[in-house]
Length: 180
Image 1 (cartoon, rainbow, N blue to C red):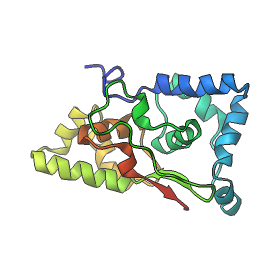
Image 2 (cartoon, helix red, strand yellow; image 1 turned 135 degrees about the vertical axis):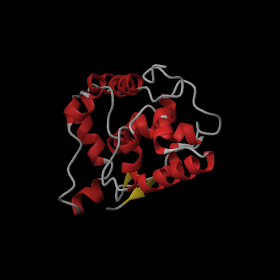
Image 3 (cartoon, rainbow, N blue to C red; image 1 turned 90 degrees about the vertical axis):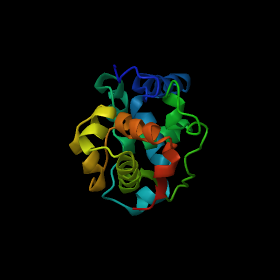
């Protein structure tokens, strides 16, 4: 099965098209889109110099790359005021329509990858599956899954959403407003 076109797969092309459609409608450059995304967490950004803005090329090159990091996707989704499940053709029942948490200017949204790992591991153990079997089911390597436990930054958005869909849980269950 082609996981790029899977009915429950995160559609990066549709996600990019939604961003580009708003950008064109509002007459914005990619740099201005990136700046607007950065400004959503203005208070946080003013206090944390080591945190850097999303690059315009990260946004504009997403369609060509075919994926983006799950953390970058949250910045973009917040700007669009959409959820990841909006970009899944046939989301599992109970996963669509759940809004992401609110995050004011003092926060930004972050995936809790340790919680995602924990839910996946619990499900895997309950099914009696090995990490290799879980990885085959999710179209990735076992290391991509076990690495979630210690990941400092991100995994690909497509994989994060395949995991959420496999668990039958909305992405909002694993996203929180952060002040880090």
